[in-house]
Every structure is written in C-alpha cells, then in structure tokens.
Length: 139
Image 1 (cartoon, rainbow, N blue to C red):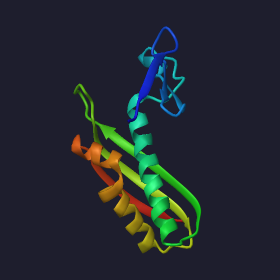
Image 2: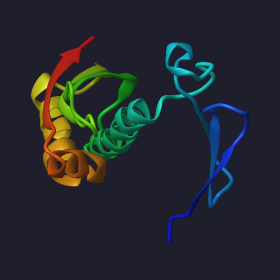
Image 3: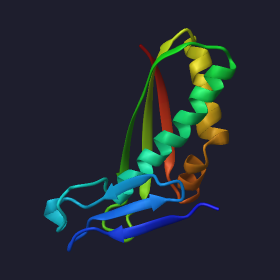
C-alpha cells in the first residue's frame, strides 16, 4: 500500500511529503498567493507525476526494444479551468525530446503506448477530464 505523510513545515503554506520509502518532496505556493515559493506547487506536482510515470514507461519500452537512449527530456505544459473551483487541468501537452538509436516511428510508438495504455497518471488525469496531446522530437 502506498502511504504519504504530509507535514506543515512553516507557518504559511509550505508542506513536506514523505512516502513509505523515505522519499521527500517539498510543496509550497507562490508568494503572491501567500506562500514563499519554496517548493513544487501541488498542481504542478501532478504534471511532474505525469512526466515521471510516462518517462518510466517510455524508457522501459525502448530498453526492451534494445534501443540506445542518449538523452531523454519532456516538456509538459497545461491549461487549467478558469473561474472554477476546483480548477482542474483541461489540456496538457507533452513534447518528448529523445536522442538515441531509435527511429521517430519507434519513439512515437513507445510514447503512444505510455500515454494511451500504461501510464496510470495519464489515465487518472483523462478520467478527470483532461485532454492530453503529445509530440516527439528526435534530437
């Protein structure tokens, strides 16, 4: 079972999460919202989770295909609902930037398998109504 412990670490909006394996993440909100900007904003943490989840998938798939991966990067951008609470992610766009022995077609297939089939975070965000688009750049 996954377990996260969250503790407030200042008198404002900074928190630290600790998972069952001892991994720590600091969260905060920007100063213009009352925080200090000393951590990842919670909604951006969701985009980071999407990147991590999909990244693991894509690297595993390319490794199984015996492809050499010299560079892996993702740029993830999103737009949230305006004038709504909660303000959910409505659109998310990912640019996968890869360098290695794979063709663009193999890279696209690996990314498609991740986003459309294997990535639980992508499935969770889609279930909440987000539209996820993506593209691949071979460096």
